[in-house]
Image (cartoon, rainbow, N blue to C red):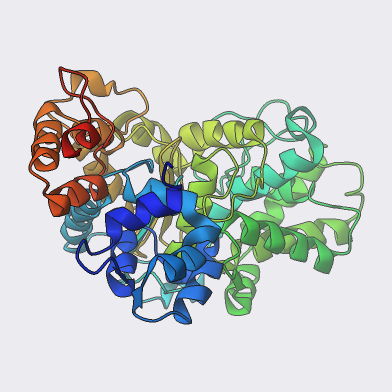
Length: 462
């Protein structure tokens, strides 16, 4: 009788002599593949059951624990997640992180008093793949305000509610070539795009105008938390008040937009103008960590489906539109240069945050308050440049032509099935070396791979 999937996994992780699985070793194996059972919602029930299970598990207790997420475990341990060699990838990312930490260029934003008080030496990076693999480096638990990183997320919610056609009757989709708070509109009286201040203020006027302002804010917070896989999203009232006290330019933009007829019809008096402008300040003052922001990035990379919950939060077309504008307009008036040299959709904020999306692979977030003269995080931009210098992640780069120069972590699954590795597996099977076979399985080798005679490891082991 063929073994069940649980039995196959157990056979490959259990000690060959005792036929028992060491719980700590099992969790370590998953951790090495980027699955942290303690804080992954997909593993919550398994984590609970493991906490009630002895340190050594037989097949029965192992089955009871892992049955609730056996597909995820099987994929992780057999190298079927989007980045199979997660350990190597983590090591490379750590090296880039450490290299960028030495950068001391730039300074924290000082035109918003609350931002000027942030420790400029903070530096954190978090990654979340579309398979839910996660890694963290540095100050990843430090909360910071989203600032302009809230703009593409609000744009998604506006599209979700009204559709792209209606949204773009009120805001354009062109790079402005100007500063993010420039007092300028297109010839048709609309803001250039949703990611500059004028465009973002327009977007918030479209978000659930049927609700009281307090409920509108709750609506946004709940959707941001869904994008982040249920992680808690915060709010800094001090940052909000600081923004509001230094907002003359934003109030001027608001009146300019009303004069040009850019707002929906419900914005019909000054009290409504004040209402939406303050709502905009509130969204900028929402607080996240790099960890929660990376999961949001992973959701966007996964076409709107959160990698760690499996929930579809946004439709694919909404995400496509948002990423398109992130690519052309997301990095202030450095957007063209960033698209040219990095080639990835990204959005920065003057708090020092950068959200980057690699479609179909992963999202990542960096946080460092040191900004360049344009308003982008110095370390964040450097991290992105070093990443694409090491990996073929630029959207227009064909990894086929850089295979000898850059290692593609997504294609690593092919590497572990190379002839040499397969030969090692078959040799181990032929001599009955179960530990070597087990190790091959755990590093992603397909144990059903055949040799030139059509024989698999199971044939030779028999």
